[in-house]
Image 1 (cartoon, helix red, strand yellow):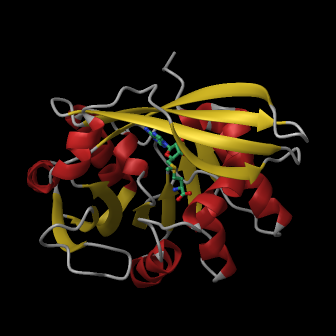
Image 2 (cartoon, protein in one colour):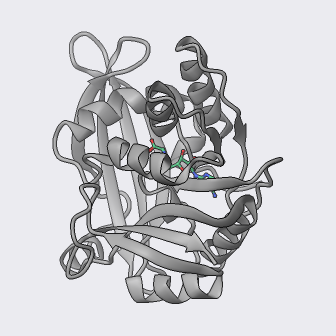
Length: 268
Ligand SMILES: C[S@@+](CC[C@H](N)C(=O)[O-])C[C@H]1O[C@@H](n2cnc3c(N)ncnc32)[C@H](O)[C@@H]1O
């Protein structure tokens, strides 16, 4: 039985789109991601596209609305269910299945695989990253393309997050949940430089009409940052050639100090 992560909870899956919209209206490491993935799928997806760690289907639906019917998979059954319901509501019949990216086996191969918006960072060790890259390679056709992103460890934020505990909460946002109740979200992150893991907790406070807290729930989240030197060796080891490395979804230069590194790699 694996440890529960933020995305495994039904309440997170059903509210995910609602609070993400509010969060990303305040600044976003992932601005422009939908069109980046659409272009990528148009360029490389003629023999099938799979969205790995598809979450509630943000990318799947954007692709479908633009004529590309991709398959989707996610570790969390709750996220798959929400993605499926959203696709059905829009009249798309997509194949969305729960699975771990380290082990899934699809009944077909794909010329294009997408791990959007930091899904790869949920792999917490180099061993799991290696297992996922090898497994995805098995599901790609010859010359198939994969894109995923990693965050470079950033000395300034690392230094800050090495001082905090995973209970030192900061206010993130307030939004209206699926039941129409206002909720405040706080998160706390601490960084371990030895494992490169950011460990955090997301705290959701539900408010009554007077603004008083009537319920609280805490959801854990851990993500691993990866030095790009490690990633280059990992890709070589797992049989990929690097085609492009971008520093943002508008294809900004990937050298220098870009924080969000977007990898586009080809199965060798
Ligand atoms: C930050 S969300 C991104 C979701 C989606 N790609 C998007 O852009 O909205 C990360 C997702 O990765 C999934 N995930 C985490 N570990 C995974 C694994 N080992 N295999 C497959 N999915 C995983 C989580 O369940 C979650 O839905």
